[in-house]
Image 1 (tube, one colour):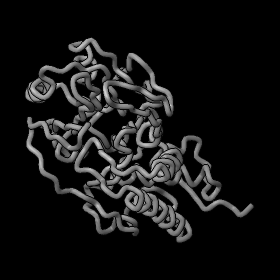
Image 2 (cartoon, rainbow, N blue to C red; image 1 turned 30 degrees about the horizontal axis):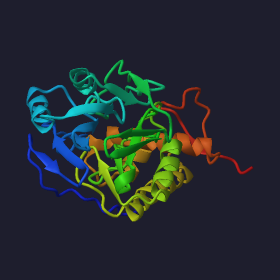
Image 3 (cartoon, rainbow, N blue to C red; image 1 turned 90 degrees about the horizontal axis):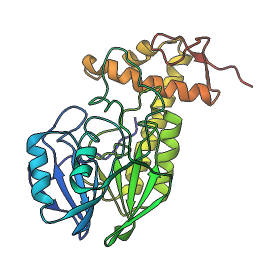
Length: 304
């Protein structure tokens, strides 16, 4: 498998507001976990009249920490990358407190598949921004310019936000330094995800700030490693099918033989996303009516 140069070490304290650059500060929420790493990193952009990205969970200690960080300032924009419970629940309460609006892409296109395991911190059911952003739409505030980039894949409504003044990207869960991103059909889509990885790579940002974990300081080779890892997984799937392993669970048992079996149900959703993408490419076929199904049988497609 292709190796991703993960970065996991960084200095932080819960409740502390850290200055990361001339325009960026961060407060990390105390919600660590298997999908949030050390917790949700909430970014504050600018000074005086500021934007906030991914306010995070409704947690009393976290709310108090954000209030301290924002003392004497006004929030003009609240941006949300997507609708998961570790990102969006505090968006509307924070915006209401400051007389601001919540910006995001809109509701998800499809509910995530159920199955054996919950692959995320959970959905913020019914989340709806006040203002739906458009791809490449520009927003301006006091001393900052933010561009919304619709980056479906992790979720259908995922948005990254580029800060023009520093050529940096707030990448949400699209690209993370500490782990790969979960792609779970039907709302998650591997083809969209790979396309958007290439798009972000080719923007040549100087730095990425994911919502979880440390910054990615050399984004282009890191994102390429992300892409290479996904392509290698697809090669593994095609090899499994060539050997007669026609279902997701059998593929996972082979592809993840050295991984704790408790993690296999989560891996199955990622493999399913890859298989659906390979069906769309015409490399894999299935007779299943519903291919978003871990029990469906697949086979190599006949050559055209």
